[in-house]
Image (tube, rainbow, N blue to C red):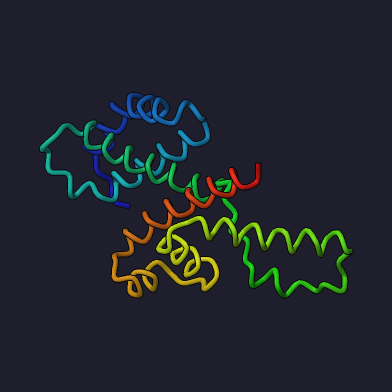
Length: 173
């Protein structure tokens, strides 16, 4: 990377403030703060040519940081979500000969419970979950089939997963 003295000077001046800003938004999760801080600086460095001086350098960096914080939280939802979509097709290929009668019964009950929960969802949400987790379609493929953008697929799928999780949690009680 080519050196930019102005960027380096501003970075040194504002990095403690930016670090505190990120820490506040990430509830002082040290590892996450360092990760987002680093990603923010790298993104700022890479897109510095687009900085138009319409706001202060710190405001511009904070905007980048907020985007990186959003990315971080989105990734956390995807990584550590309690939501698990059982793949019924995979479950149906389990070698039943090696299962005990109790395991066979549990498997049958699991399949029935998942289907019952899916049936509680509106058709579009069931369809989204089916395309994504049973058919393993990409957001682009689902978007083409349903006539919506990839971003719309992402948002609707997120809400469908949340609704399934609520149904599963209440169904399980």
